[in-house]
Length: 186
Image (cartoon, rainbow, N blue to C red; front, side, top):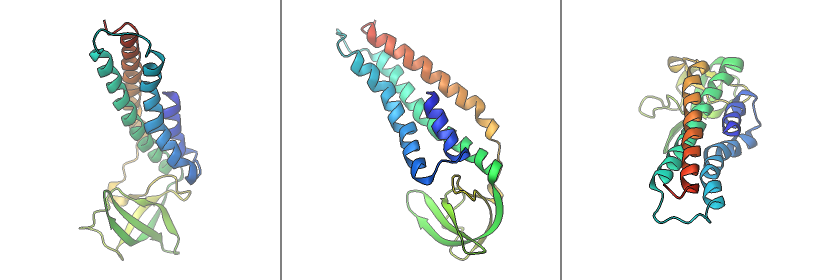
């Protein structure tokens, strides 16, 4: 659990190099939560059950879902902390608007440098088009996504309760689910 939170928090705050941020997210959002479920399932597979332990399966499903949500929220908090520490304001020009699953805008600074990563928050293709100028807060190291001036309200401390609550839920539900599985679902 601590590894998941640490990976997602430190990726934008430290910042980790770009080639490590993607694998860090995959590890925290998929590998660690899957291990949370698969390790008990594989270690306890020799335990025989008269009927499937539905409550145990439900508890492990809750823990798995909470772990994925925890990774995403911790990443948001880390990005806000990274912008809070290193963020710079600039007038940026919209170079391209990608209207895919998530709308993304490619931005460049006035001196022609591309802002990385692409802006996703506030990049509505009906409102923004190539050539528009936006005032954005961006991370010069490229670890945190940029925010448009109208949407910036940085408060990484606001996530403490949510992160702590999800971590506690994962530990309690995961432990309870594993205990139920090992007892045969009684």
